Length: 396
Ligand SMILES: *Cc1c(COP(=O)(O)O)cnc(C)c1O
Image (cartoon, rainbow, N blue to C red; front, side, top):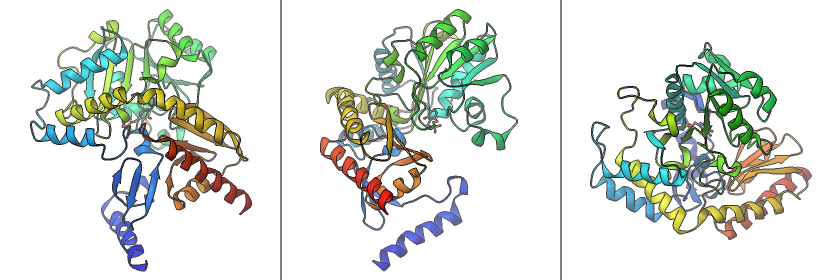
């Protein structure tokens, strides 16, 4: 046992002397995974209820993904956007079908921040420059995306940021109405604020924002990076409100584990970019597209969106009644367990010691975002482990 402990310490030392400290010291060294099971360098097994931060929709090493990726990399790897390839066209068509609007046009990139950067640049093509975003929101870490992000702790060290961006309280339509004018190029909204701790807006909020955008001509950009691709039980997090955005940004789950982002524009917005306006070398590369297409096919065939809603109900009813839990919020398999006390880090650590991985987006919230392939037995196991961790912390 002493020998294996040494292995993990050795990785930590090597990490510190070779990587920058922007992530702090990561908790574990993981070496393999299968489905929702992860294995660390000491041979410990974990039930993965974080899913690579809402990313691994089908878990680890899903046979459909490994087969699709293997086949693609063995057939045609990267080609750049000087050339077309069948996968990028098929995936854009599939996304159009899922969005349900034939006017939609897709731009592919590699991450959520890049998808939002693309939306930002697109909005400049309206001829307007002002932007309204919300307090607490998270839109990425690059300078443009960070300027949209409504979290002072992440922004302040990097000022000056982009000018002309106003933040209003999330969920407050009156504040939004005051700030959005005919000079506003875009409004950007998360359907559920994931990084802020799975914060839900009041019912009707997205519909209200849609109306404000209609009245002023501002583009309504929905950042569905975390709430997209089926995670909330609908393909895209805004569908619960029955609205159609002007722009949708996606990443996280889109590539089913591979890096892939997208900025989808609808209606007039679909034609704002002119040749030469924007681009990225790896965006829409054949391997990431093959993975995304395979992922969507499995989600559809196995009816995993409907499953996510069933699991949501099971988890909410079992966890919400536990002592020390104030509420369980979120939709589908993006859930935030709100605790009575600021003990989220202790709960996360206790769960990790018990072999369950979750995260603590803030001091009183535990976030879970397991793969949509999670089984009823694994849900049961999580609920039992969570209840035990809470009981230990309360009585210990
Ligand atoms: C994670 C996230 C991003 C940033 O995505 P990256 O791939 O880390 O750049 C943007 N918006 C939302 C809502 C996210 O959850």
